[in-house]
Picture 1 (cartoon, rainbow, N blue to C red):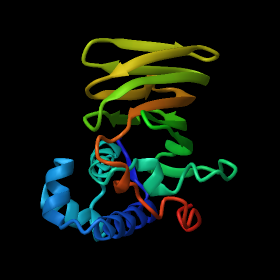
Picture 2 (cartoon, rainbow, N blue to C red):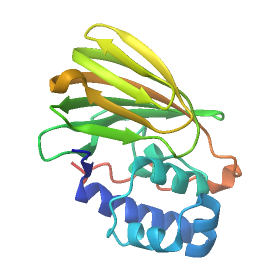
Picture 3 (cartoon, rainbow, N blue to C red):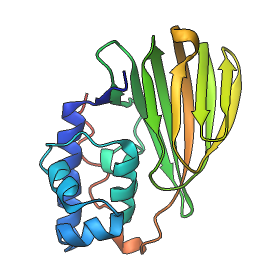
Picture 4 (cartoon, rainbow, N blue to C red):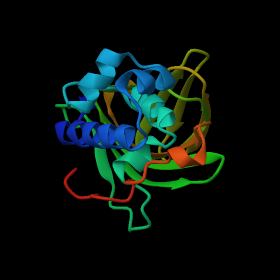
Length: 205
């Protein structure tokens, strides 16, 4: 089971994407072209009618000159309470704990729990210079086009994610782990940053 974003997160992101687009005086078509996402998909996301992948949201955020974490209001300088972004009906989840932006990179910290046969599929968004992982419990299997890496409890590992990747618990058991994602910052000018990034952290849990 691959799961999806929580409805409250989808609705909040749609509102914030629409607000950021309008603040920058961008039409739906203009943002679609900047982010390489179809106009139809972008409209559905703004209306809260689509369940997009994080990769697609990374591209939209880059088109707005910001980051996915900033759109979520994570990294505001508060204690990292975290926002549950992804989940499955069988109990797997992913929480975006915190994020820090520099001029060159956005750094995101996530906590994950994968159960049974649940799979998270990522990649295909903006380039990821690196993904670092530390497994707390169980064993994590990370599959890319080039390799399959298994990280046991207490171990750490790093992968480059230039393309798709998949997380799953090894042998259908359970895996709890942290990941740190390094994302190249958008190439658009500094004036494109999302002004409301620190607002309304509540209402998403």
